[in-house]
Length: 305
Image 1 (tube, rainbow, N blue to C red):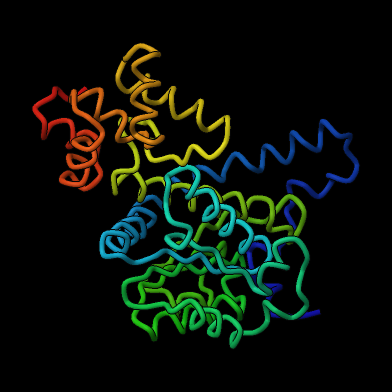
Image 2 (cartoon, rainbow, N blue to C red; image 1 turned 60 degrees about the vertical axis):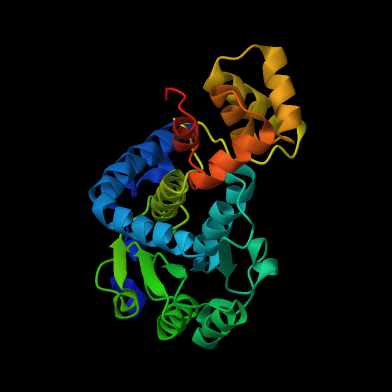
């Protein structure tokens, strides 16, 4: 059977795992793990491109724009996962980073027949979310040719958005619609065509880099601490207070007092303690520094550590 997909690297049989069905559980896992070893090194080679995409995202955020991931199946779910982790981790508004998946919310759990084959649906979803020239749209597709993703990317480009493509094959139609193309070609999967394995792992690594780097560069991190997290449950309240303690070396009672007076806002509490000011003044210092804790502390003459 001859089909265009048959020529994709992600659809080729892997000679190194052709005997995988003859192995016991441990041997299977060692073989899969051996295949996974090359994923990180593949992504490492792509860092200049990933960094450029992150710079675009930072520019978008600074101008009031948003980041959208667009994918189908596994790629769509990975985009939604990365987007959904930003509000609790970095205190972002849910609209700031969003994931779109072919077939909508239902498709996160269950496949929606035919949804990924519709370029029109991809374009429609872009229109529904009011994409503008301020936004960045990142299409994700292991094959580099999923119609839903290509339709979304094309429409986003027509609307003036910056468009990035992430795929796991060379020379795909995605290149026609991406202003920046990231080809994470990790080779044939351990199980032929199972792109939820190496291909998806590469995609996850890239998305982690993109949002983490972007959040650091807009002031969501102080040292290596997530100082803009949303303490929305018991675990995160504990983590928030621990972050304040680690950032200030203050005793527990001072941390607790600052946390309460700052209404649970970690950045404010840190600046209060480090700069020796009340909550209102700490908020002003943060506003003047664009939300960067180090700069807020320095503006009040406190020593940066």
